[in-house]
Image (cartoon, rainbow, N blue to C red; front, side, top):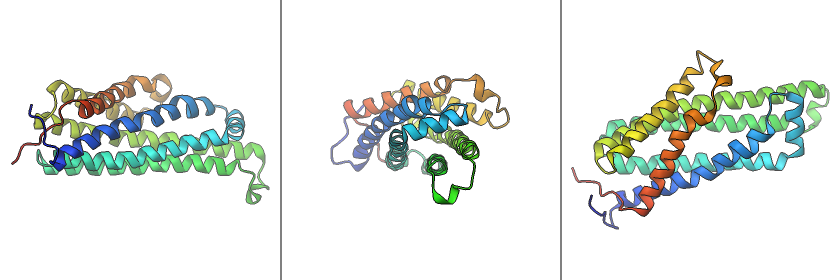
Length: 235
């Protein structure tokens, strides 16, 4: 593989993509396992008590997710710049799927903020029983889960499309490109299956369908940053 020229904007875009992959991982894991995973339970009263007791921490998690959504936008542009010459049409489709994905994930953050609003003790809500507000807040958080799962369907589609482009480009090891395709397809297929089979939600850990794509993004980010950045061949 050729070492890319520092002046090649597509090579710089590949380096930016690697950086975005790595920057997105810590806040995502922190929120999933140390904030939402700890504060949100199946019990509405318990969840409400947790959010009120740790509101600042929960807001930090929301802010972290918004940061990740912004990173994803930069990542999609960077990947498009690197891979558009492989197949511009497929690259555009991947970006379109990514836009839908990020929009749905942003809706999930709005659901979190709505849950906090319902528990805020605002004057407009004083006529509503606390137990009702707790149930409504937990319902809003369930809306977060629904929007997030739907967003992951399009994340799987986006990742599969970019994986195919990486495979066809010969810019990265074939095994890494196949890993991207398989991990993304698994993510998209499992989360799509939740739509007709919602009972799967309770029987499957996010680790089963999330770990492969997470490990790919970590590996890909490191590879793009510390190895020879891919030189995109001219048409």
